[in-house]
Image 1 (tube, rainbow, N blue to C red):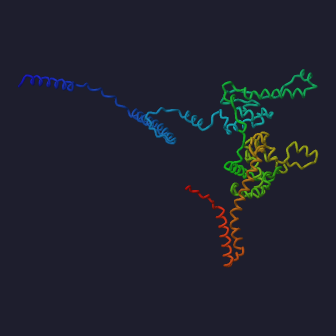
Image 2: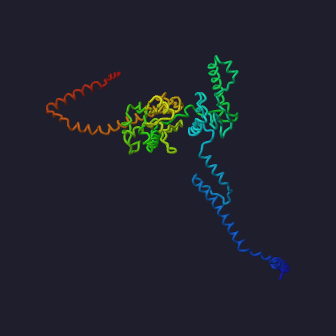
Image 3: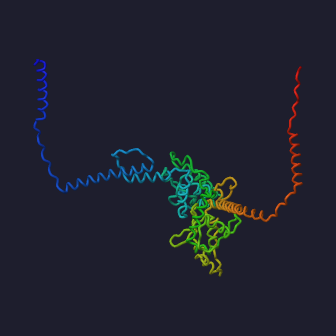
Length: 447
C-alpha cells in the first residue's frame, strides 16, 4: 500500500474518533422537577384560558372593525390592548361634531337650548340676546352667565341692572330716565364686544362664528318639510282631547287661502296619517303643526313645544272654564265669568324664532322677508296646486276621446271636387318651382 494512502486513512480514522468521543460523553441527568399539585395545575390552566380569550377577543374586535371599514390588511397575532373606556370615548368623539363647528345647526341649537330656562336667562336686547351669544359658541351655565364650555373656558356675566345708592338717586332725580337709557345702551355696546372679546386669544370662536343663516329652517324641500310636518302632526294625536276645545286666534293658513278642513282633506293620506279623531279636531291639529308646534306630555300635563325656540305652552291654561287664581279674584270682584284664553300660534313663539321672525329665517329670492310659517304655507299651496294639475291632465284625454266620438262625421267630397283640388295643388307647385329656379347667364365662347 502506498505511504500516502496509509497516511490519509490514519487521518480519517483519527477524525472519526474525535467526533464519536463527543457523543460518548456522559450527560449529567437533570434533577427531577417538583410535581405540581392539583390546585397549581388548575390555576395554570385557567391562566392559559384567560390569556387566550384576551388575545382572541382583542383580535376579533379589531378585525371586525377593519372588516366594516373595508380594510383587508392582515393583522399580527400580537396586538397591544387598549382600555375599553378610551375606545368608547373615541367612538363618541368620532360620531359627534367637534366643539368648534360653526357650520353645524344641531350644535347651535344645543347651545341655544341652554338659554331656554327663564330662571337662568332673562330677556336681553336683540344685540346681545341668546342667539347672538350662541352663534359665538357661548352656553348659559348660571343665572345670566355664559361660558365657552369645552373651549377656552371663559365666562361672562351679562347683567344690565345697575344698583344705585341713595346719593346717586338724589342727584339724578330729574333726568334719571335719560341716564338709565344711556347707561343701558353703553352696557349693551360693552357686552356686544364681549361676545367676541370674551373668548381667550387662542380660542377659535374669537376668530369666527356661525353664519347669519345658521338659524334658517328647511321648509322648502319636500324631502324635509313633508316628514317634519307628518311628525309634528302625529305628535298631536295623543293629546287631541286637549286641543279640541281650545280657541286658536289664527285658525287658518293665510298663504294657502284654504280652510284647515279643506287643507287636511287634500293632504290626506299622502302626507298626513289617518286619524280616528273628528274632522274639525284633525284640521286644528294640522293648523297647529303648520305653525311649528309639536305635542308633548310631561307629568300628566299636555304641552305644545317648539323645537326651534324651545318655547312651551301649557294647554290646561286654555281650556274652557280654566281661570288662574288672580283672574278668579278679579272675576269675583267684577262678576265676570268670561275668561277663556286664546292661543296665537305665531305670537306664542319667542321673538327670535324663525317660525315668527323673518330676520332669523334669512330667506332669499322670492321668499325674502317671510318667516318659516309663511314659507311653509306657500310651499304647501304650490304642492296642492301641482297635485291638482297632474290630476286634471290624467282625466283630460278621456274627456277628449268622448268629445271626439260625439262629433258628426266629415262629409265626403265628389270626384270633380277632388280633381279640382288636385289641379289647384299642382298649379301652386309649378309657381313655387319657377320661383326657386335660378337662371344662369350663358357663357360667351371666344372664336
